[in-house]
Amino acid sequence: MSGKNSFFEGEKKKIQKAVSMIDDLLAKKDFSQYEVIALGTLLQNVYTGIEGIMRYQLQNLGVMMKKDENWHKNLLIQYRKSDMISDSQFEGLLRLLLFRHMHVHGYGFMLDEKRLRELAIPVPELFRSLFEKG
Image (cartoon, rainbow, N blue to C red):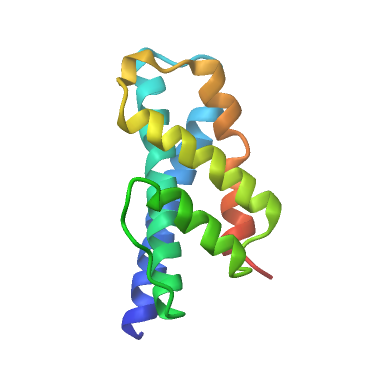
């Protein structure tokens, strides 16, 4: 397996594991405070993994992103402009990016279970649409 493929496949497997854990949590009726924190962390992990793949793929196309205060959003916008994702995938990823920013700069015990569930429910399908092309 080439370096390119091994990076992509390795990241994809890590994201899939996090998505599977999100699925397991979503099957529960109620979360403990620790499960709420865990779901928030898993959502952040999923986005961070996808972002790493996006950055890697854009670099392989010769697109280099300037790391400034807006680089995360600019990366997502450039990925869309490069026709690597659809508008609906862009919207789903943007929601995760906005959450990731809040999660990084906040405290886990302040997360709201209802809002996290709403954010998490479409994540398994978003993953499938990005990585299980048929």
